[in-house]
Length: 114
Length: 115
Image (cartoon, rainbow over all chains, first blue to last red):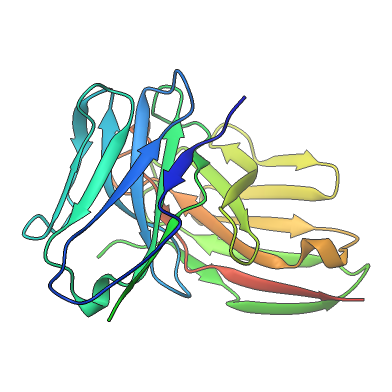
């Protein structure tokens, strides 16, 4: 079974630029999560999708971050404009149905904002 | 804001010794407590989880215990090996979010197993 795929793996941008990350979850997984992991901290949930609907985006800084999962499969996370404090690893995870079950993480995108 | 407290932040043990990491959560209704292992530069991977209807779960050298009264759960690794060296994260549902999939992660424990 293929795991969660993410691209790009690394990205360096200057502040105020925009950037987009892509995630392809495990086939058949209805729930998709985007996490931000700042160096030395645990993952922090940004947004949770169930199929193509948003379940929770209470931690998403909506003035600069946006995410979509239009067809209920792939998802993109965008930052516009980026700030220095956005430097982090952005992890995508998926689970079969949502709820109290295993979340499978992708390799992450490491973002550096200069 | 609501968080999951994880201790210690770093732990160094000799190969063969045991390691224990403890986490405290705030919502008494929380019902799912996973533990993830993250090696340097790699993705977090689930190593064990426990649900609120049991007090202990074991998988070979790894065990997790849950104390619902005190609202804490612990990861126990016995007969540690150098390949156990990694960062370990606990997680729990935030208040009012049991069965939604939403998790709050602890700050992580860096475990070093010295050969």
